Amino acid sequence: MSRCSTVAATVLSATLLPLSAAQALAAGDGADASSPAATQATIASFGRIADAILTDRTTALLDRPQLARTAQKPQGNVRLSLAVSRTESTALASVRGTRARLAGLGEAYSDADTKTTVDSTRIEGRRATVRVTEATTLTYEKIRGDEPPTTGFTAHHELTFTAQTDGSWQLASVRRTDKGPRPVNEPVPATSTAPVRPSAIIDAPRAAITYPAAAKPKNLGTGTTYNYAAMAAYAEKYWKNYNTAYRRFNNAGGDCTNYISQSLYAGGWKHATTSTEDYDTWWYGTSGQSDSWVGVNEWSWFTQTAKRTTALANAYQMDIGDVLQVDFDKDGAKDHTMITSYRNSSGVPYLTYHDTDTYRRSLSSLISSYPNSAYYAYRT
Image (cartoon, rainbow, N blue to C red; front, top):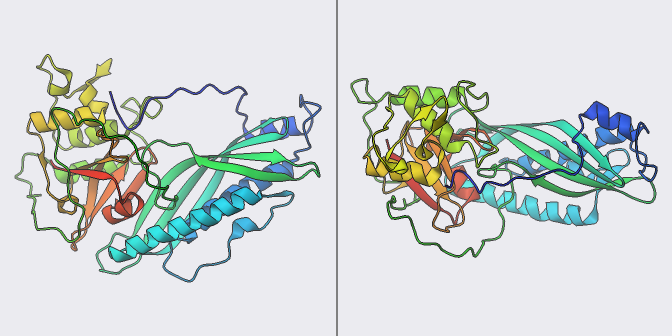
């Protein structure tokens, strides 16, 4: 069963410590005698380096003259390694490529705010592992005039630092730990050559991603079968603060489809329980749920078979309450599910989703980060 990504279990060989505990360890309370000194000031510098890296990436998206890279400036006795400095130069060039693709689709950001919080620090010998949470808000530039005010996301990252013989520390690596789509400020990797697998027997056709798209109006009135405004309202209420009435699947393949199922249920979709085939049912209960409630491909199979959705020819035809799925590497299995919670009068849908929890990300932004992926658009 595929949800938002392959299920993986990782066992850490050392305990993740809250910042205060890491400070105590670094100061000598149980630290290995071979461990270099990592003072409270050093640990604080780890966080500032992380914030500088992520802020530089966000700044590269803005439609204004670029500022000097703040991550190149040492923080106390902590700095970027030469390899990471080069990698980040490439990363910023990639993000500027995303900005250019966005401009070609008529989108830009005028301002941004990135805040980074250190969640834990682990020190083992000459290695420090720091986990942080990034909260970024981007302000849409009013190009067409009907853009929403902002988009935002929360992402989690792990940074590794290594101690040098002179007592300083260098950033050796940085990676995002979330499942789901990469944020718009994350570099686009080189195109992969993943082998193509046969598509599922029951499947939706791929959607075009050219803009503008032929009109495909949707009846959003109160006399319709479903309450699309309620779907959008639910999605925007719980995009970051999860509804505790439901189980979370972030660590079991991803929560994206579980969250979209909740949104559809809030808008009037009914449980379907009378079938011997799991992908022909769609339900959630106190002791379990159907695979189609939480699985990306199973959701598609169910909704197409049960005629709960119809495929849209172009992803830009999506309206409030419509769903988008993406097969990032085109291997025949869909990877992620999102819901349209806003659409502007110029015909651009905005997606809200879990896993790299994100609010009102434009379809144009998603395509700019994943220009070579396969897209599937569903009218609900």
